[in-house]
Amino acid sequence: MTTAPLPDDDLDTPDTGGPVYLYAVTRAPARAPRDETGEPLAGVADAAVRVVASDRIAALVSPVDPRHLEMVGQRPQEAELAWLEHVARTHNAVVESAFRETTVLPMRIATVHPAEESVRAFLRESADAIHAELARLDGLVEVGVKAYRTAPAAAAGTDAEPSGNPPAAAPRPDSPGRAYLEARRARRRARADADRDAAALVRSVREAAAPHAVDQRAHRLQTGELAAGPGENIANDAWLVPRAALLELHAAVTVLADPAAGRHVEVTGPWAPYSFVRPVTADAG
Amino acid sequence: MSLFGDGPGPAASGQGSSANLADILERVLDKGVVIAGDIQINLLDIELLTIKLRLLVASVDKAKEMGIDWWEHDPSLSSRARPQADAVDGAATPALEAENQQLREELRQLRGELRARELDQSPSGAKTPKDDQAP
Image 1 (cartoon, chains in turn blue, green):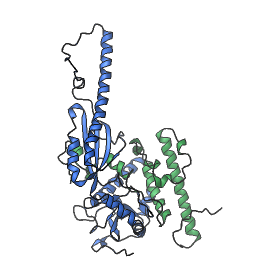
Image 2: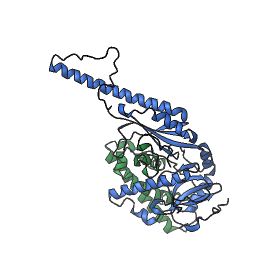
Image 3: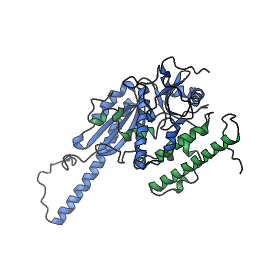
Image 4: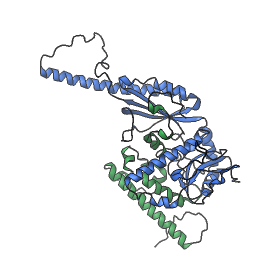
């Protein structure tokens, strides 16, 4: 099987022969990815991203300096976190650069091969599985839909739906003890209403998204300090969506948001189908 | 190039460099293609490098705080010796340390195997040197 180099100008960043970081596998692109200024796209640690092709599929890789790997885990926590962020963002940026133009299979972070030659062997030996997966995901993108809740702006009044006569003249409490108990009861009722409201939001968001999507994954709710939403995260879903249905899905779920009532909906993406790719095995048969 | 530029609120504005780190991490750490271990290439080298990089990730407390614990489910790591994963039942930190400990152990072992192989034979291909040479 021939592994001819791509017919273009990608030879400005030669194969170092050393280990490479593997970002994604895709249909063979016309040329190596470029950034907005036309320069070769920078990968992890600023190494230029290269295309390794075999037959009609290609891998996006960049050389990794072995000395750099030696340092991993040896630095102060803060530096490690910064490095992780760099790798994660770069990984996603490279995946995205290819994803803008074609279907891609994003690799998990920190997939490293000892040399480009072994990436080529991987492409060769997994070709059938890769083609099948690319075909399955063709034209589909991942969209993140998150729902949040916050305390409603107008505290009590909104949630206690009057189910008959309006509470025009609240009965005056006879004693401080009774007033306290009533206040407690009201708080508990308000909390239960809020929970019911949150569950209803999650349900309606999912029902609104489903008709536009072909698959769904529920991610873990975001709770840590990196979680940067408008309130408490109550749903964190990934949907696999035909490109053509993106705007419809967006409209269908965002219309359910009502920030004044504490209901928030966030849409992210489109992402490469990270949450939907299946493992690629060399001998899938 | 956001398709969602007209959405309500800044978070609806697509990704690019402004994407929420938590959103990126939960995808790149936790999802994406895992290359299964059956590839006829020099698996040992790949694992050495990959485990090393992932060690870093596993050591990041903040990832754990976010609830990211992919390494506990990662088939490429958990398929290796995991004697009593359930025994580590305590708080997040001890579990994390145990995991790190295990990964470091594997790393050292792999490194030893690599070195042994380099020393005692001429390169005759990429056979897996799994069988331990009795000391």
